[in-house]
Image 1 (cartoon, rainbow, N blue to C red):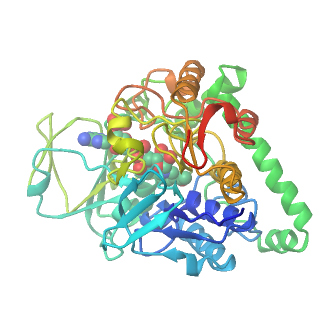
Image 2 (cartoon, protein in one colour):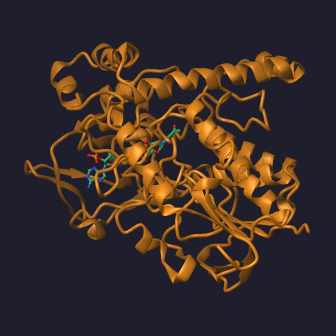
Length: 487
Ligand code: N01
């Protein structure tokens, strides 16, 4: 007996697109991608703040099945990445499988299949649900007293309005992550004054972010696809070094950390400013910030770094705890995301009515990033423990999607009706991962978005080879499968 699995993929960002194309290539045709945004791209659709650039080299930041030879630079701007993702969707003919402006509000397992409900009241039935809902998704707005009394404009970087006026204005930017650093660098030249409010300074490593890719390189790579594949393989191999540096203490880690310190020392000569910009934790502990322009921007005459804590926001600006008040026309919140929400606030109910909120009461947890006990026939792509700090997300998404197709194949062949990871296998994976996260640089004493509310590092602690081995073939001992009514 063969039957075509009905699949709902939630999200059309990198993970969702990788999943859809992988399913398509594996011969599965009955899938629908539900995307709440008005276009594909995930973070690359939602984020459009000035200066948005990917700090991962573009020749790596692409799918293996959709090589793009002609990136404009070594590090592409956000809009170019979003266009690339849109081109992949169009080029693969996914348009008629994609529903934009369609937000999923709930997904409920009936005992045999899933009922997925959208905010528009549409209900879809699916044999499998694949949540590719992203990590940097729900903007975090800090609870600063008086924020709602501010008379000027307030914008969160992840919800930037294209008509936001920045030139000639007094701007305050709160937040010092990758976003804050990029937006300050971009807004400083045109601003009347820019104040960067830095609660915890970051190590900012210099890299040639503005380096253009000559058009001839694009033409050559287009003509020689084998060479292009080799280049991608080299970048992928190079990213393995990053994973090694992050996960194991070594001279390589120390070398990179020395480079981060050197980047600060050589670009900020003023000892008082340098002192205020020096973090009290090791480089690489937080998601590393990379920039070629930030230190120059904040040394400019119209710029200042403010390290005094914010007391409150007033109608005119920001009152600091040292008694000073900064007058502000535009307040930019580069304050990050609720990074451990994953599929929530969707209401997800699995076997016997168990809710995802209850299952994750002590923090998000999954088996090998993709399966959750209590939730049959539901998989995540870039779920908990994903390697957002070390390994190519495109690689990880494609690998996970191929893993899922193996279950879809078994369903199609009538070998399983439902599949659910065991609690024991999930607990073992999480215990092992927890131990392996011990010596990682992310666990060296900083407060970062990698940490869950419970203080656990929510990242992948292993190298790419281990990830590939874990997700190449399902270990059937780790799953309950149901076939024709019995577990
Ligand atoms: O967010 P963040 P992000 N008062 O969470 C501060 C990716 N990304 O949007 O550190 C004052 O890193 C907070 O301060 P503290 C990348 O993975 C990639 O910048 O908590 N400050 C922190 O400085 C990145 O890591 C690219 O003390 C407050 C900041 O807000 C991830 O996105 C580009 C505050 C939040 O930093 C998130 O980066 C951009 C308060 N009440 C982003 N509340 C690429 O190039 C929060 N903060 C690929």
